[in-house]
Length: 490
Ligand code: SF4
Ligand code: FE
Image 1: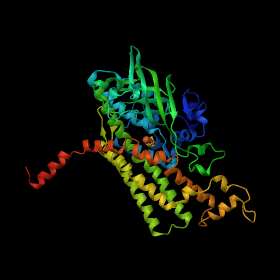
Image 2: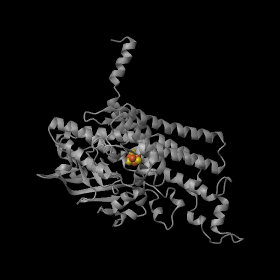
Image 3: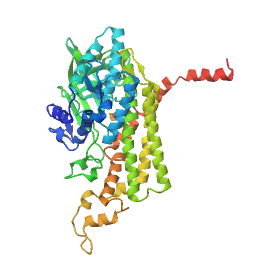
Image 4: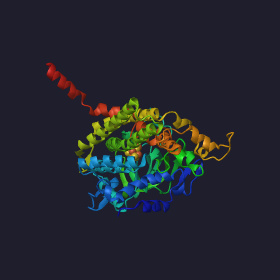
């Protein structure tokens, strides 16, 4: 059964998820002003799925049950499915201008599904069956599942088992007849608090000595022993200000990251998808990362669309829209943004069927996609800031614009003075101009910049991670052979 946005939010209230922020436990995290926009953002994955206009992109038939499901819980059955995924993420980016978080779970489903199949074939384990049963339950209940890969990693020069503190990588601390006990943490975890379940995956390739660190499983978010420490975002406490609106830039939506701690959590056997098969850690990592690098060719493009629109509006409100350099900058932004989209579509169109039957993106093209995402959004934000002008970071507060305090010699208020001196083209009110500038500030430097700017660099793997994959997948030997052949070299 598909859930509505309201049912999703109500379902979160029933959970006992432990959340800490600013050194205190947050009891009612569903209604907390800093957290709520990120919940509403995930809520859009439900709202759009119940809108007939978007049914084709947002919903599909389950390959496991034949029932109608949200595409965020789907195993991709074709390259067309992969393309629709990218289009769905672009749509969500356009509707929220931030990170809507639910994609990490979808990417984990597809990576764990195909990896467990191949693992079982080699090791005679039963992980694939476990995973299919789990996913059926997720699809039937339309749950949000968080896909968690990134461990804190400690000293980057040491293997998991060689760390001074063994907990810096997630690991098995006890093997029981009925399951395993795990300890460790996942860092900068997107969408962790507002997910019903989590899928945990290893963070990197593992050797035999690291077998206890080669672990994958599913767990309810509020299982005993799990808690989260909320990540700060720039300008986050603006959300705590009384009546905050214009100053937030994006008052409706936002992203969310946290440190998730697993303090000896018991995982029953039926939810275990890897427990020591270190030779498959790398496959799971590469596939998940590949899917998530494809995702960025959708979500970041959608957010980019909104930012380009905002920059064009700022130009109009400044009365500068006819200047040829402004037109050219907007063209440049569109060119960069659509180049990202091309990569997202291309790695999907070149998708291949896995042994397990679902479709996987072309790994080389997905890594090229994400490598471009580590650069182009920086150029796009630079151009947006260029067009917007410095006022986006020097403007007085919303409360000044609304202030009735008399300051002028003729009794003008602070608000009247602000409105007088920040008025620009007659096509907008001063408040509309403020709104669009604060919105650009939010996407370039404020809380949504986590999702658009810095996440473009580090999310789904920092630039070097893609370069390693590009080196591995780039077939340099094949290219040398091409050159030798035509140049007449034996
Ligand atoms: Fe989804 Fe993009 Fe956020 Fe990743 S960064 S969870 S792909 S919206
Ligand atoms: Fe991300």
